[in-house]
Length: 475
Ligand code: AMP
Image (cartoon, rainbow, N blue to C red):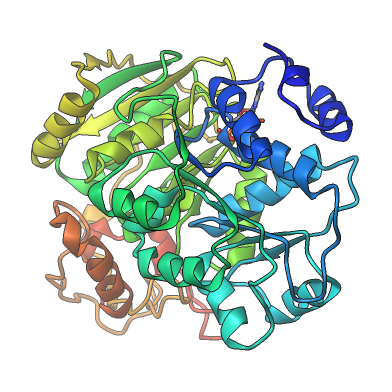
């Protein structure tokens, strides 16, 4: 089967050719003709299957006739995260290189003004996250009555993120004569209900079972200590001993994402973090730097990293076993893409055992143990590898004032700048050994940022920096 048999326009075929694709993927082969015929589509497919092109290519063909009017977009694509929305926009610029269509991106975390202007000019394709779309609608800047094609992408992630009421609201604002293309990796009951309510006799296309993992990924498991500090040491050892080109390290909690990335950076690794609490600009900047190879190790939360299409990721490391077993499949799907091989390594401590059993049950496979070789003294990620292990400041307890926020400069008194020679260690629980129930993770995080944080020698040095504008350390 070739792309030219699918009914796509010449402009689209030329762009596909330029992109270097010769054979359509199974979802493309099945979905494209249905979309071109005007049918609703229910695509059960994960990212990595080529599903973005399965809706963008026929959309471009269909949108070649007609023109957009001010504030009345002709098509709408809903994405659960800003990064995915940006990624789909990038797909439109590649596949739509021979078109003169206008694409507007409505995502949170960036200014409304540019978005207003784009809407005013008229958008053939609107790509949005649900919250920002409804914001614009509420301000009267947008009419949804001109939409003839609606795409709901990553519906099960929308569900996880609590967007279903927004999706229902949006579906009701768009005329029912539209064509709806609906994609989800899994079909939990909530999602099935949604498809029954909003799809009209859709063509159902399923290309991968929800429990399948790519054969190009070697999946390994490593016993890990419960202790957070020791676990970070293990992570460094793994990174050094693996033949690692680049890696995404997943943590379950945003706070740990922050700490693990800063700790890696502090040990000289080329690492940055990505999580939902970061400003949009810095999220995108981090992602771009990982994509172009400037950053080698991306420490990320599930929400931020879901569905990211970065073709050559050599390793995925699960610093924590994911709470939802399906997330394991999404995580490891970040490697072994586009014909490359990849490795995933999952760190499993005692308290992770239950979650890990669910993962093995879901993928119906016992994972092989990693044989961890002795770390080398030179490695990837740009680390300055210390020959000797760094000495902890055990001999001299560090007087640290509790911090109030992990994102603001930390009001930590510099080490030698204290009148009290023997400060008391504060028995504040650090992040180690804390295994929250999964329902508590988000709540926990909100508390994290409001709460005072760390104690004694668990404190990473990045928290010990002087506050800009305050008195400098005398050390
Ligand atoms: P997606 O599932 O949409 O995230 O796509 C995964 C990756 O596959 C992206 O990097 C696409 O550029 C790539 N891709 C999509 N369609 C094809 C194709 N027919 N042949 C080769 N690569 C493709």
